[in-house]
Length: 331
Image (cartoon, rainbow, N blue to C red; front, side, top):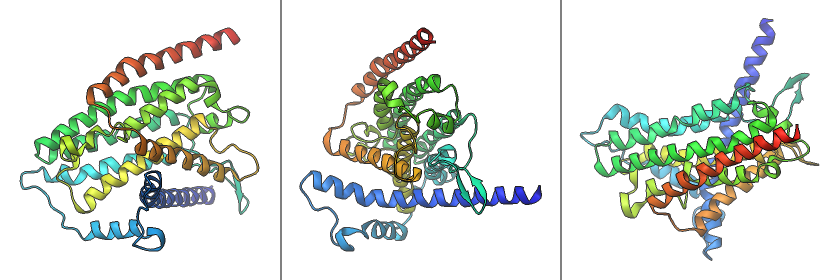
């Protein structure tokens, strides 16, 4: 029994290290990919100087930020000022603990689930942990003792809370169809038909809400330079600023992975290994983030709130009502 427990702990630690390493690699890669994709869409070259086709540009940026002077405002709340970047990044990373990226595999005679841990309330875990990232943004704005930063933090929290509501409700239709809160069960239920076919309205609401939740264009109001001097992270520099930057990309990867799991069949797919299918679908979702950033202008704040509260919220509730009605009539 002790041996089995030790092996279980060892396998769990290895999975954590692999997932964490892959996410970090994807964050670094996304910095380069976003620049190059946007450049090609706008008929530019993008990074070209550092390494072949600018491949080493993310490393150069990291070195620059690492050696940049770390400034803390004199009247800032130093403890919260230091904790805020970590509060933004860590929740996005630990959300991956319940996201399955493949089916079971046999390794040295042991059956290994390609998910760090499959808990029966994975849906609730995602939103309980993911919502903690809001505190990091609010803390950053308040702890800086800068009125512009505080305004950016307040606006960011209002935006994220508003759209997190519709984000969660948009997934309830999938939960109703599956009858389980486990993300592994949700993926297995899509073996024959993906949920995007059964829940197109839910996917539409989720896609818009996810953009607003991670503060991406056209919903990047908290970081609107022309209005807020870069918003809640105005006073940050060096690696603390880099952690906010990483948190944005980590959140993009997280919401894309959730979209793949709930609507796009997870690891399901023919011919290729399950992990390959998961990564292909994840990459397509991340590409859409870049595509939208290159295409749409920023909304006004009143338009942002109007869209969330007066359009998406009623539509998401209507989607749940129709889903329940169809299930009752069919069964």
